[in-house]
View 1 (tube, rainbow, N blue to C red):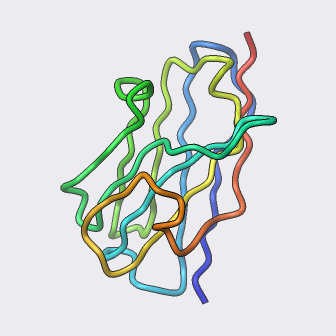
View 2 (cartoon, helix red, strand yellow; view 1 turned 60 degrees about the vertical axis):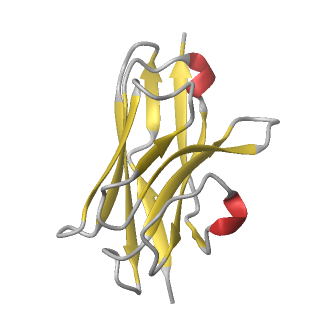
Length: 125
């Protein structure tokens, strides 16, 4: 059974940084497309970033590129989201998602087969 476990969320002041991690288990990580999504209070879950299995394809929400960086370490079986220059509007629950055995990316929630439970990020002004 595939499980995705996010970590690294927390409370940070505006302008600060956080690095989120996601550790999948149960299947081969290196062949999976991975994505990050977020859901702010009272809003729908939206795409943040995605990366292909071998890391050669990345995609970002237009308003986040330049501040957020998605990466992966297949040897450590871990996905990362480095978030810099955080703003109060970045406050949300952040989810990682996976789709296995495919080397491309997507912004669509329904394209991903597996989801983590989410990690809370709170940015104070």
